[in-house]
Image (cartoon, rainbow, N blue to C red; front, side, top):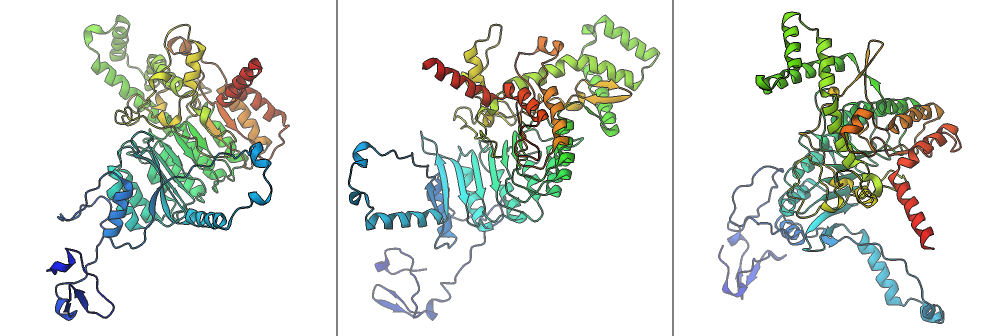
Length: 563
């Protein structure tokens, strides 16, 4: 399209009369209709490539510039601005000089009141709030609150977010997600930087409750918050299956917040089923739901030794036989001990039943399995020091990944900063223990390759039944403001006694010392009296293990000694 020299290369805009003026010359609209046909831009779904275009925009890694340019190219006249997330102002303490001023001098002027009104209006305007790294000002967290995120906006995000190589967290609150846009959002996550670990989708109820898709086997999310999404028992069933089944298990998710939903006894049972074979989840909140005694007992059952089902027993035997065969094939014949050789001859000559083989494999793997499991728990034992202090069901506040560590962090690996690594050996100092207690949950990513299938853990045989040890990986369970009575409380009393038990003598010799099992159990605001004897016993058992209580106790002691 030719442009007159007077326009200096600027694109002309049509006037209301249908005639376009350019440098004193008049051109009829009809004469230029064939050359100026309006074109509509169609945004392709996430993951599909656009046709090569010489004017295609290359993102620079600056979200404010990239988002504005892409919105402009798609024809948005008014679009949300990218702003730095506001921080709460410090509490104002008036000085003596201010308090002595006359009352008339302290009245706000008309301009001040007008500015305050404008600031309140600006607060509610749609924006994309970001938190930046203090060093290089790169975006590390994104917050969107209270405006609808459509498919086209997600398409823009799919172009500009992958260039943010330090992005760690995405928070969508009440953005009108649907099951369709959630699928687009999940596809967008796969394009983002591997440093992205935390996702919060709160106040976004979905008709099909497809939140479990965020916890797929290929997911890298470690912290997921789904508060206030009207999740019911059906949604809890899908989430429980995403945590673990007999053949699949999520090995990356560390914390899951399901507070302020509609989960009842049946849904709590599904979540408990997911905890049977899940050994990566450390933090779970079911606060402000509709769980009664039946669901509470289901949760308590998996936190202490529980009976394996017939299907689980069959699968366990299959795994033990398969593992034994692999070990025999890997070990050379020259290095096999005489005892093992004698046992192989007995098997060849006399035959051994599958039950005997299972017991043999249990003995061979008991020390190895417990050592790996307790080693992982030692690193993750005191991570909940900076989690919610009031027990209101909010997710723990994750720390910031260091730049040097973020690219090196592999999928599902536990990373500990140098200053927080526990010292090995005898005579561990108190200072090193305090450093370990400051480990944040965001730095915990379970090592998938080292994780042992829970069905291969040592078991106990009683009355012809097989009992597996309870889940001692979960560190925090929040059940405040449900509908649990003394019946469910009795089940959690057994949990507190079991979880507070010290390590066995065999395990303690081969593993570093440190607390394992549940560290924090919140049962307040349920349908029983705070003076209930069982509740008081649970508190007496759990308070010495609670890292927050320990920290408060140390602060009180330091304050008392200082005074």
